[in-house]
Image (cartoon, rainbow, N blue to C red; front, side):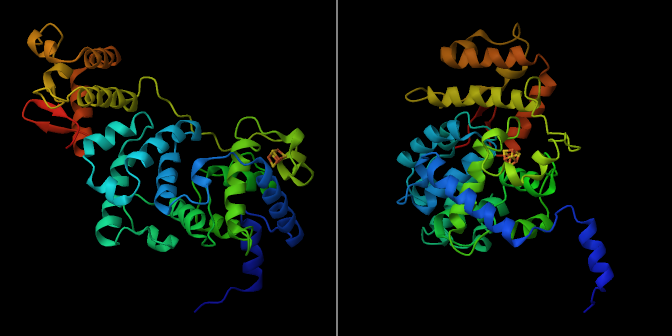
Length: 345
Ligand code: SF4
């Protein structure tokens, strides 16, 4: 075992991007955030006391990379349709992807169904209690595991999403934004703010504070109850050296993949009672419109034809479309039957 000398320790503290925080300040921030949360929290349905651990887990997966306003109606539909892990585990994957609708990043829906299968088949339908156990489920990373363990089971964890990281970094490090992703050192540093009691309120409250007050683009510093101690505010709100990740959409492969998925979802939606079981000919995506067999086009419901036209508007490059279809198949988001393409069964 090696021991650090006191000068090494002092040097490592000096180099740390996470400053030492006085106990009085930690106490003040906790009290202020928890008090603020008790009156200002949005009445999100998954915060109700009788929400199941499974429903909390679904809300956390859906809320990754998708605004809460878009998540809420979809979450309500899902919980009505598939209230338990066993319900989702048995659902046809095509139906799961169709119901994911426009939440984006649909691989999350597949991972959620995989997690549901593990919970239903190996854990007797019980969502694991601790963050450590939750992280063993498919598609559950450290953030989601900590959030579900805290909000559903009351484990004292450190929930560190982008909002929490931004609030703490502004308050104590005087920087506008945190680095691209948190490391062990940041999680350890942030853990000192999590109180022994009321830790769920702290975790949920500081996330909510980042979402509603200390927002990325327009922080409400004039009315912020922590402005008197905020290092970033006191420093004159200097611009960050960390460039924000710009989420380009128009013209990207992600946009085109989404449009291809929309065709398959539309075909699935309109497939009830028809002979083609929601399949769409590969050629309709890749062949030049003049080469397409008009009968294949006639087979499509009009809504699906409209979605297909949108794919063609986005790209007239058959190689690019073929490549993206191949990616969708290998990601498990689409399935191929001979010349036909559809949502996986
Ligand atoms: S003063 Fe402004 S930057 Fe500082 S915590 Fe409050 S809202 Fe965030």
